[in-house]
Amino acid sequence: MVQSKKPPKIGVSSMGARQIYEALKDQIVRGVYGTDGLLPSSRSLAEELSVSRTTVTVAYEQLLAEGFIEVRQGARPRVSPTAVGDRNLKNVHRQHPAHVSSYGERLKSIPLRPTARGRFAVADFRYGDLAPSDFPILSWKRAATAAMSQRPERLAYDDPRGSLRLRTALQGYLWRARTLRCDLDQIIIVNGSQQGLDLCARLLLDPGDHFVVENPCYAMARHIFAATGATPISIGVDQDGLRTEDLPGIVARLAYVTPSHQFPLGGVMTIGRRHQLLAWAQQSNAYVVEDDYDSEYRYDIAPVPPLHGLDDKDRVIYLGTVSKTLSPTMRIGYLVVPPQLQDIVTTAKQLVDRHTSMSDQTVLAAMIESGVYESHVRKIRRRNNERRETLLKHLHQVFGSEITVEGANAGLHVVIWFREVPLSAEAVLIGKARELGVGVHSIMPLYDPAVAESYPRHVGLVIGYAALDTRQIERGVALLRQAVDQASGHFGASPN
Image (cartoon, rainbow, N blue to C red; front, side, top):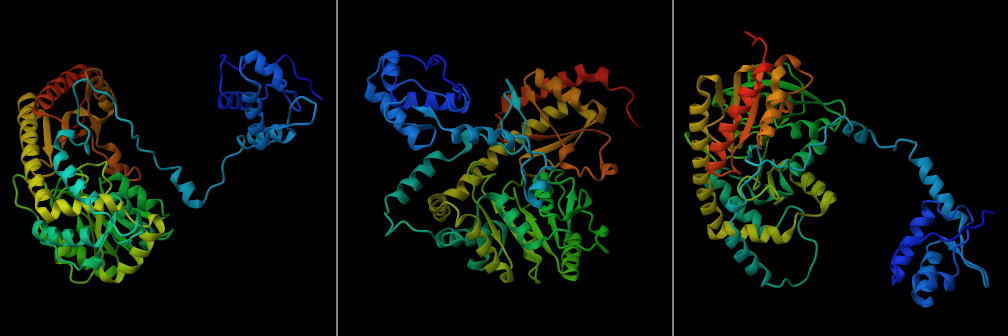
């Protein structure tokens, strides 16, 4: 038996029962009292802490109820051997890796995208962020207040496809904004585009299958599909989108594309390539996932109809989101699925999370019905066009022919290529920019690491501008110029 030493101090006087309980439990778990060790009597501990004996008794009763101590009549409380044994068992468990499924093992190889944002004194050109001032807070509040004033008959789980009201509103919006025709039952409301992609991956891919993906592409999509155990077949892109001439002979279950504004390079898939892609999908019995992630933002070119509109064989799954029009924190997206997939996608959605938040769906539906949503989209399109023009103007003035800009006709980002900065100097350049208070982000994570021959030879940056005002953009470009100049000593011989 290990006898207790003088009881260690627990803390300040005038403690409550909960504090005493927490302090003693922590000491027991850390082994302060040792195996089978004796705790102070309730009387002595009460005197030491200047609290009532009842307070200490309540703490001891909680420790007893949870199995941390044993109490006998007329004896001091004793640490339960089981409590110490559990602590030792936990230490043993920490020595062995956790057993996870094959899916879990595959996730270990996927880099976790950091959610914490760096603090940049001047500007962060991160793609995907939006300006808080662009959110239609008053319109959202009015719609939310109206929705909350209508008390439902009961609080219950709803349709996993999403509220009928929102799906009806979206059906009309998709026709007006994207000339996309569909039945209500084809629309499935999801928690953002990520869940839409995950549902497609789970339902269409098995381990050992193959899927086609653009290179470079939205990396999270490639990771989601690869996590199923399927293997990516990366096909290059150019100013006309996916190079569909490389598709013949490829056997795959799915192709993921961004035909209206290729992410990240901005190419628009030509009508000829769209027909080639659909013909391949029909011949291969494959599905095409069309990610129409930022179709609301067209500037120098007319809106491009979605691939879905050309599909007469029910091979296209259309994916949309409000992350680029309202907020990425608002997890609402939607799938338009072929009729033969309606039921299975609905079942999968129900198993995952029952349904997307009904309150947010109600508010969004009200905004679409009233026309407020489309008015908001037009307003922020103008704002982002101003930001875009400011960015392009200052890039041209500051860098001139040193850079090439891609993807500027649409969306909320551009890609700039530094033709005189070799890829080997990228980390130095990004580091110098950070020191000057500017966040810039490499295009490299968007390339398939298994296709090294596709890597660019010069530094490319994905420059998002939707979260910045024009002064931040102007100052950020000027400081990026300084960063390039400061990093120039690391460039070495520029490749031919």
